[in-house]
Length: 231
Image 1: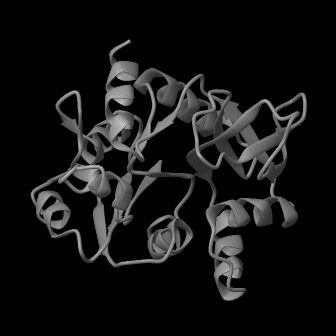
Image 2 (image 1 turned 30 degrees about the horizontal axis):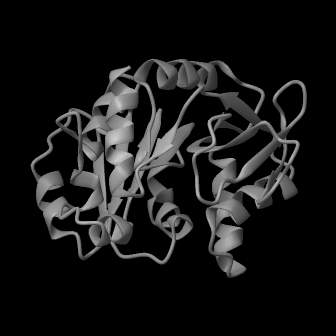
């Protein structure tokens, strides 16, 4: 399994709320978020780990430069306008088979992630498996419309009937990179529109439910995430 971490955001909301560290280096229970993800990926069949960091995050660049792994560890330093553009910059490291992509501030229980990855590895019928959750604590959630077999039928900005929202963990196959390149060539610029295009292009996407997934967008989210991980 190849893994990708998008750590190219500015973390402007955290900075405005008094957090001086760049988001990837914010610690949860004493562990930097980026280091926590790397450790979890290494425990879950990592064949490579690939990270994008923006040009302004010199502290993060310095931190990553000291990480030594026994598998390919690729770092792209580039400022991008969106997560979808960051994904695009990492795409050539992800063409070798199934891969899992997430953002650096996505927080989940390790055991839940392991169960998800094992399910994705065993699934030979779908083009991707997206982590979803029924825990909704997001300013702008993306609702995921699924059928009774957890096949994804669509991604919605609002819904009164959808049980799940996107968890921001994307398990995909190289086929999804074709859609990504198509989206960029057409001027699309949001991950949620990319996900909609995956459905429009006829890719077979499954949803995998994880009980709780958090994002660290605000200072108060740090304590919330630490409490969640300590449960």
